[in-house]
Image 1 (cartoon, rainbow over the protein chains, first blue to last red):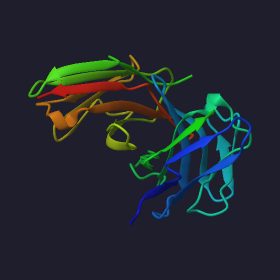
Image 2: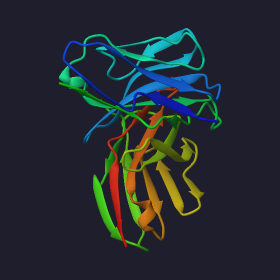
Image 3: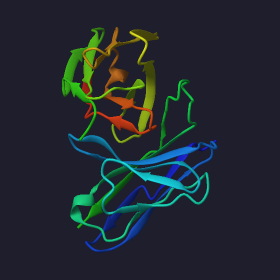
Image 4: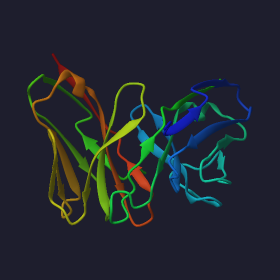
Length: 117
Length: 110
């Protein structure tokens, strides 16, 4: 049982390049989400999905696209990378209602460190 | 803007002492959770407290919630060097979005 798997672990991009951060989970979780973590800022929600074919914006969605064609995968796309997108990105998933009363208890991946030059 | 703010931002204690960190949030919540992050790793769920609960225990962890003050505290008793990590509170409303605070960095000195 691998849990939440993120690839790549490290990536360096030049400004204007595009790339996709991959996230896959093998727990049949309905809910998946992407966060970015910057020093002193904690984690900020980028996009999330409550099931295949359904996505929505979080706190900081600009510059990022997502899609959810399967329950298992939730890729995050940077269409034109900017230095402000240098960060550590975390994918997290959950079985909705896992904690009871609609609680959303997340399982996190190990993170992807992105540097944009 | 972020929902939760932790206080203090950093905390250094001696092994065996208790560690208390606080979280304040801005809007009504369904649940509040605490997560732990070891350096260079993803976050790990520690404990959840529902909006209708005031206190919860799990091993050496004690969480309180005061919805009138929109605040929560996490107490780690008899701390160990292995408790050194960053601790985050996270809140959710009925939308399932989980919003995190900025975290408290805890250092437990042997």
